[in-house]
Structure formats: C-alpha cells, structure tokens
Length: 126
Image (cartoon, rainbow, N blue to C red; front, top):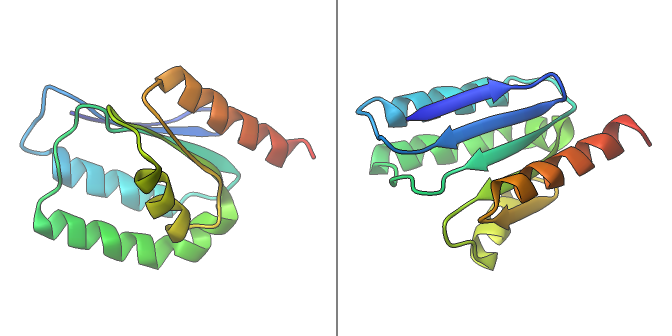
C-alpha cells in the first residue's frame, strides 16, 4: 500500500507498507511526480520500512525522476528523512548525492518526522 500526504506544517509523507497491492509501484511513481512539482519549503519523510523493491522499469523511472527534479528539489525541499528497517550509511549517501539537502536515515518514524520538522522550521524561521 502507498500513502501520500501533504500536511499543513509542510511535511510530506510518502509511505510504502504492507499489505502490498499490484498498484504499489505505479502509485509510488505517481507520488514522486507530485513531489517533483511541489513548491517549497517542504520536508519529506519517506517510510519504506517493510516495502518491496521496484521492478527494473520502476528503478529506471525513479532514477529519471531524480535526475529531472534534482534542481527543483534541491531548492524547494529542506530535508529528507528515510525510514528503513535496517538503516545504513549507504542509503544516506545515495540520497545526499542526488540533492543538496540534509538526509537522515533511521528505523524510527518519529525520529524521522522530528528531523524533517527541525529543518523545515529552520527554513521558515531564520
């Protein structure tokens, strides 16, 4: 299941979690398109703990999206927090290479949300 929510506080939630549906990959890629068109400032919490992997075509589309939105996200997004079952430095480094924004990887959803909120607060209140 994919859940995409834009909150009034500027935090964007993108969650992929069980039960998985046949439409998950398409829904996820559609959510990425929506994120790529957002005006800032905002911060993203992506919760992929327990999610499945993308197909090869999905990975190609995700990579193309990341390349196409690099400049826009680097200027509009204030931070990205990634929730994974097994966080590791490679995950953080991969996202840091994509965009010029702070990235945090954790297994704790509340920690991820606090990280995103902290960076969004800095953007709104210098």
